[in-house]
Amino acid sequence: MTTSTGTALAPLPAHRKSSARVALFDLPEASAQLVSECFRQIGIDTVPIAREQADRLHREKFEACVLLLGEEAGSIIELARSSASNSRIVIYGLGGTAQDAMRYSKLCLNAVFHEPLERSAAMKLVRSTRMLVFHEFRRYVRVPVMTEVGIVMSNGGRMTATSQEISSGGMSLKGNQVPEQGSLVEVSFSLLTLPRVWVRGHVTWKKSNKSFGIRFDSTDERRQRVKEWIVKYMDA
Image 1 (cartoon, rainbow, N blue to C red):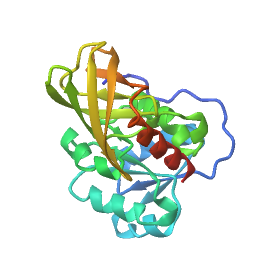
Image 2 (image 1 turned 90 degrees about the vertical axis):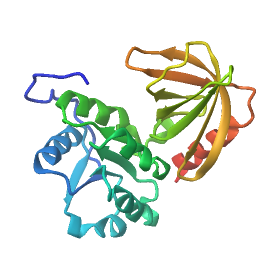
Image 3 (image 1 turned 45 degrees about the horizontal axis):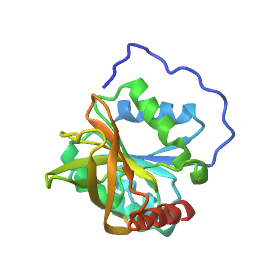
Image 4 (image 1 turned 180 degrees about the vertical axis):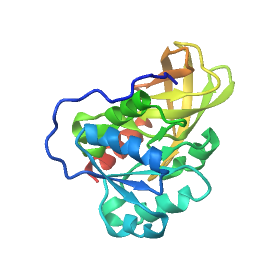
């Protein structure tokens, strides 16, 4: 993770008054302060919620929630999503391990603030997902979502990666192994309301940090299920 020695966030252009609210669920004080400052910079309000006030995630409307990844995270996510008004709430994890993130991937974990928290990295994450929080989906065709993705190579080899963003045309991922650029693959994954789907594609780019992109095969009719899921996600 890139580090920064800056002590303050650079000012951003003023945004319109927003009704978007982000719940900060039972976060440590220092973490809550930094995350709150990042959201405030783009005009999004944050609401600290103590553990004993968890039912507020079911009773009140929130556009997003930041919570610690750990043993109890799943029950909190389910509590929020069981509310009709929060069924598509944007979920940010804080800390935890890669295994923790994968544990809750089927609950549609959208993004993770990695620890130790660093201002510039946290601000970058908030900026990259702000359209999702504002529900401006039609201008945001890539949905940040973390889920486990199985990859089968053309030679029969298999590997596993974690999705970072998904669109109707492809996805970006990160894993311990990275397939060669240009290689043909078949990916499989499931999401909150999307049973496991298999789609052919090919690797279009890769980076030194072990992230890479896959473009879905336009002739594979199975990718229509992914497109339909994104449309429903946008319209929810």
